[in-house]
Image (cartoon, rainbow, N blue to C red):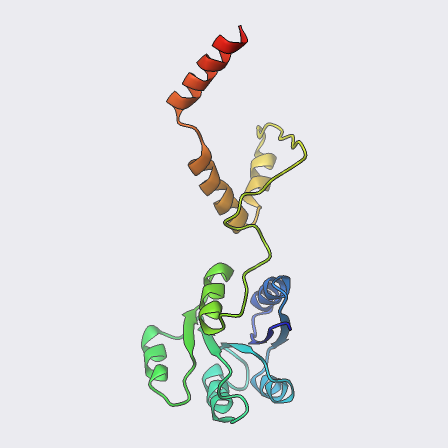
Length: 193
């Protein structure tokens, strides 16, 4: 059974990123950009997890959280509050309330970090269907041209940051030390000739 995630988010770009990444993980995602619409959605189809942005039109996320946590049918749904404007002090004050969220994060936040917070609240939530942390086996030859001109370097810079970070980490980790390379080349040359 797919995990149902209800996302209250007014920022269309961030909402689209959340929908895309969570859907890739197999979640059923509903995004609302209004507190009242989200409350109605939660009441009609109980989610497994709620991601709630504080910055919503007409009703702020703290008010939405209060209503959700007072609802007997929804009060036990794990709720993660996200904010780009609230201070740590505001979060600390809200944590003292009876109708508090289970977790609080500041935006902007990388999806991987947000996913860790979500998994802490809902351990059954799996990770993305990717090979992060696993070796990638490529069975076809890949030809990489020279990156001589500025356009090629710009294209490399446009790769998703997670791909760039993973590539950089593996390149640093797997790269042979200069002395090892020289010794390997000498051994190869001795054996070949």
